[in-house]
Length: 163
Image (cartoon, rainbow, N blue to C red; front, side, top):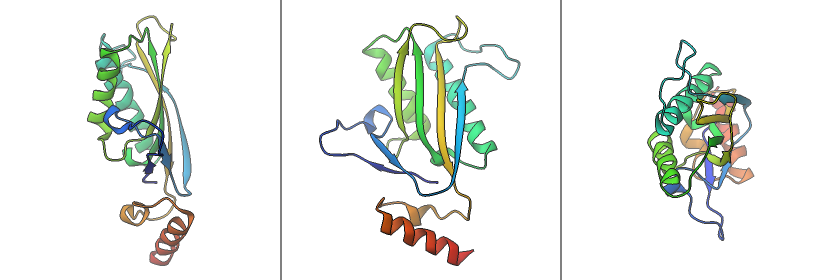
């Protein structure tokens, strides 16, 4: 499901950091994606830096959501586990990668968690995701722009009538 994002009054503007404060989706198939690590196709860690590992883990998330019939627009939530997270330039680096992958218009909601260790010592990142994939025909524009129940119901009726 394409996401509608919200920027509630009183919360800092997060889109420049590559994520939305709130992500809303209409009904669909919920896809839970296990923590993706920076392995290559042969089961080896490719990149040894945080940026490269984050890009690899996010690429795996995109492969997983596509395998479930979705696209990057269907990803509603990301949880990034970042080993030995340092403030300052690390946040800028993570934000830069997220904006490269998802843009700044309607990126998914996300939580960044600094952790002391991950499953293997060479892992610097792990990324979990949740997506909502449409079960009917896609009409991206019908679901964008408003998140109120009336608009979502109207979009659902339009999609049902079109099918």
